Length: 246
Length: 200
Ligand SMILES: Nc1ncnc2c1ncn2[C@@H]1O[C@H](COP(=O)(O)OP(=O)(O)OP(=O)(O)O)[C@@H](O)[C@H]1O
Ligand SMILES: [Mg+2]
Image (cartoon, rainbow over all chains, first blue to last red):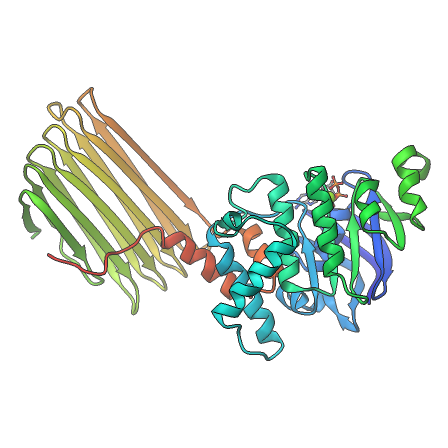
């Protein structure tokens, strides 16, 4: 369970989050919608511990642990995964070496032995097939020269490898063609267990047709201004945000 | 006194190892190919400051020069390189990379001189550097001085730090900051590969 209380955060001296309260229980899918620049990615980055974002007030508790006191890699080991709105290219670091380092770090954090190469490769293949990502992409450097859609697919591939318990999908649907969107969403649904929870950031209803949220929030200017059921997403799709602004 | 080496026709390899501290002057004759590897990698503190002058004295010869420089603590790694194309139809390809940690100092001054008679010269001079701390210092100065008109020459240089976004991306996947840094540093420096075997 993720519990956010009165969260304020600053980027480059400017306050972006202005008192967020949000609780996501195990097994729940929350959609987060809102105007451009409202602070959705900022909230995501604060949850995963990006050092560029400074928390000035408030708390985040994840399964009883004080998240704000943990390093980004410790948060990942605790089961938190973020699909980046803009995945980073890392020239010279192969997908295989990167994934291996990530998987082994996770095993180590649980006190387990690192995977044997053969087991690791078998796992890579299985997960690759799940999200229908080309072997050729996996042979390259991390995200280097990937198209926008390929990068998003690669995020879900990494999620499949790491099997997080809480996922943030930050506009994973943007840049995906219709087929890719379905494959990625179905991949996510296959990976999900009964206790997996997620915060899904999107501007469009279509992703939510595949991954049905329990709750929809609207974030405007650093504050959650409305929380309701799935019908809220449809209403925003047809009416926009104006009726929610004061 | 500089060490003087003559390179005759045929293929040659030269490798400078860790504690090399004498200047070098190399003369390349006709139809020769020289692969020159320069390695500075600090185990204990190093001061490796040398001048290397390479003169093309004959035609149809090639030079491939690679430098892999890694300094830490108060290491000082300086290379002052002159590539002197005196003769036509020769090629030189020079690429040095530095990784500087702690308070290490690095300097790369490379000059490719293409004299009037050395038509059809091809030369590439590159120096790329990574400073891991704010207190590491790099000076990079690649220069081209060209007096012939039918030549292909280019040069480039960059000094950067580790990409914060890449570090964070890796940490989000559970990789420790130390391991993430290691992966990025290796990715940078491993572009320069040293040969296993060295014949002098
Ligand atoms: N790293 C950063 N450096 C400077 N400003 C930033 C940074 N990250 C966010 N901001 C600023 O904070 C505000 C909120 O940005 P954020 O990315 O959280 O918005 P968002 O809700 O995700 O928008 P979008 O729907 O366009 O993705 C914006 O004004 C943005 O310019
Ligand atoms: Mg965003």
